[in-house]
Amino acid sequence: MKNLAIALLFVSFAASADEQLRREALGLFGRLPSPPAVTREAELGRALYWDERVSLDGKTSCGSCHFARDWGADRRRFSPDARGQLTSRHSPTIFNSMSQPALRWLSDRKTGADQAEGSLTGSLGFASKDAALEKLRQLDYLAAFRAAYPKDAEPMTLARYGQAVAAYQATLTTPAPFDRFLGGDDAALSAAQKAGLRAFMTNGCGGCHSGTLLGGTMNQRFGLVKDYWLETASSKVDVGRFSATKKEEDKYVFRVPMLRNVAKTAPYFHDGSVEQLERAVRVMASVQLGKTLDDATAKSIVAFLESLTGEVPANYAPPGRKPEM
Image (cartoon, rainbow, N blue to C red; front, side, top):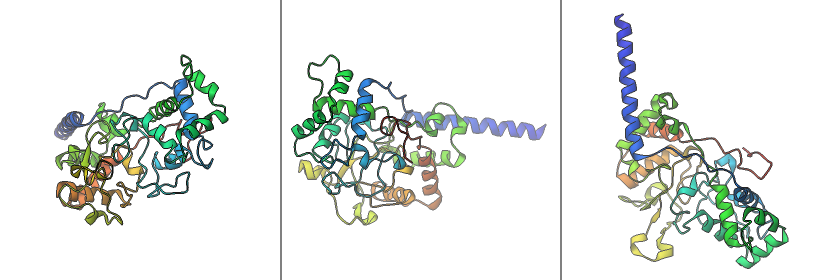
């Protein structure tokens, strides 16, 4: 009986500790909402997102920089575009990204629609937006635009192109074990992951990586207490938002990346300069917090970050196909 009482006391204590941890985590983070219903607009966006013909070289789509096997990111440091040139920064994951207040490393695109439309004369290589619209006409997309936007007198516009692609991207959410834990499932996280969650919060990582996405909602200087390139060994020093705004306060400032699926989206940082997640965690502790993490703490934080990995959405592939993993 004594042993049974001790066991019950231990279980009660563990449950209480889990509940306290969950309350603290809910105050700082949040559960991913359910994805929106798939509409005709989103179905059109899916077709457009994956259509390689909608590019200068006829071989590049939005998905050419965001692979299913990389959880919507790109394992290459930089991605080739339709002009045969490499992107200037690493391609972040597209999953869960539409709820961010701004996109890309410099927060220079305010919505998914802006990003999609801008990509036509960016990574997709068209010389002008008129050239992109003419390509859509040649590919007989008009009927699909009419079905998606039946009230529009002229439904096939680049603004609608952007909105359709963004509507599709909004369906690409990835609920993870962490969300189940926040919802009350104590068994969703291992003991190591719970310890990592505690370490993540007590060490101040949630100061920037907060909210439902654990980041993605603010801009911050990369290297608050130390120049970032001293730790990342970056081959080129990127001045961040300063390159666009020319404001001194924007030097080395980037959008704080969200951490959803981070264990699957290496390499890390704007230049893909760090290959291993544990190394990235140590870099952030050093240059942002001025801390040197011991091995146990770094490994426990990595264990927690692995709990943010969800399933690749079943519709992350061209229409009628499954994701290529």
